[in-house]
Image (cartoon, rainbow, N blue to C red; front, side, top):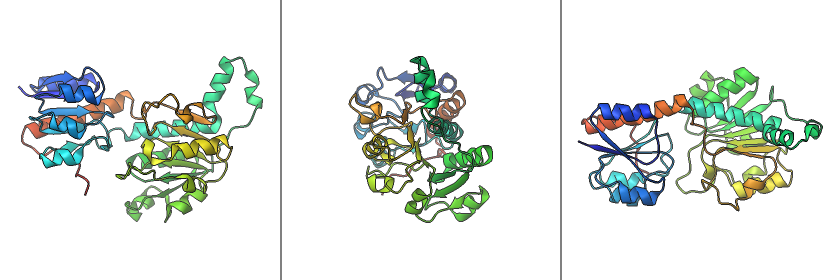
Length: 318
């Protein structure tokens, strides 16, 4: 009987499905790579979430036949090391797009209306917070999207049709007809995108180099009232530069569901930054998305172990 090793909890529906298909499941005792390396053992399949799966973990699993990523981003999985052994790495494509998009809208509104500091003020007895500064109405404001994949397209639909925002986007790899079909204005370069953003939302995958897509020079191009939302990857933006600009009053607000270090270290400057809303990488954490992602992992594992080619295999970096 084959074993599926699971690095972090997944939805019970997928665990039941794997058992019904004749697989054993075994969970890591701790959500750390050290525990994974020590415990993966003879597993033929692995499901991993944001913990990833390192080259050392690949080497520690001699029977491994597939690594299924419980999400769309595989930057924490040693895809190249797996490929050298002929082990496919799969993604849960588009399984969480709507949930992450709705989280993006929630963070956008939280930043625009100062929801988190308002909540804190009421709990501290400061009902007069309502007189300490006005929020921002998003209707007719410009939403600038960095990237225009599945999540960004959902964000564009909600923001455009629901909030009446003008939506523009920059994405070198997406064809013109996709922009046209969604009623979104294509911007030729990221610099032109930044200068017109009332709200900037990031939806690009992490760079292989690890360098932030938006550094301090890019952030300087944003209008002083701009709101920044990041639900993609913590490495997509220079968080230190962002924090410094917020503290200096050179940006309106920021709302981040992702950070370069997760969980953040106690001295992370963003933790004490006014105007910064932080959530613990929970954009995809809805009941609906968790079921879709876990079941997609389970089905792709059964395809692989059954001699079929899984639908969403990731190619190793060049």
